[in-house]
Length: 312
Image 1 (cartoon, rainbow, N blue to C red):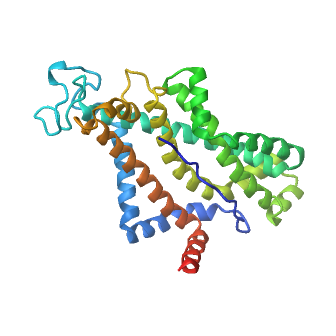
Image 2 (spheres, rainbow, N blue to C red):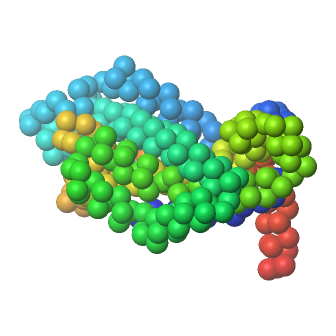
Image 3 (spheres, one colour):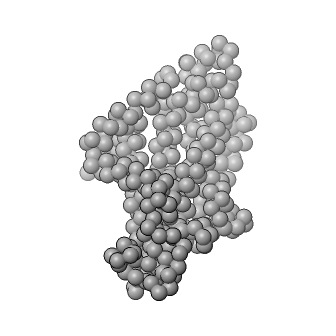
């Protein structure tokens, strides 16, 4: 299982503070969702994913680790096990529900922490420029030279398996995406008139970055964070598939895939169902991320339309 990082391209921010663009986004997003059944369906899947992850202990009909060797490899639609059981007699539905909780916690924790670190580094680097910018960007360039999944595997292999180390590895590999994006935005924004005016009036560097630059970079950050959530979920599943993620006491979609690969022909549901869960959530994240990008950056949609017209 592999994951591909989102490619980001810095765009010029509009003149003046950009708070209105972000604050007006919910209304435009509502209109956009009303026009697109795909975006509406994606949002419904994501809401269901979050709710199921939060309520997994209440929704699961069985203990996800309870073994019933007399009920091994029961097929789906069995009387007491709706989605069947695995090779140890554990309820597949319960393990899927608890696996969604693992993906939810790991995904959102890693993305939020990566955003905080990446935005901070990018703001400082792009706003201050000079030697600080050169130092930070050389570190980012060195980080980007490593394949993200291989770097995450190396980190977890050194620290040992476990969700805490998985989250740490995903943060270490993920913050550079936001740092590169925000640095490009800050470089263009620091020369705008309202930024220069604030500096001329004696505003501190921190005040200028927080009050005048940060609001203008929230829109692309939200888009990239949404798309990166899918990447993080795939990477967590990949690490668990390799035995470097959640331990045996925690159900994970990746570990369920690993357990079911030996029974793909005789017990297809063991690998197929967690694979479909990963596919559905990641597809929903990408579709909703595209809709969010169209709302917060309409110019990207027009550019894509022109490219398609040129190709036609």
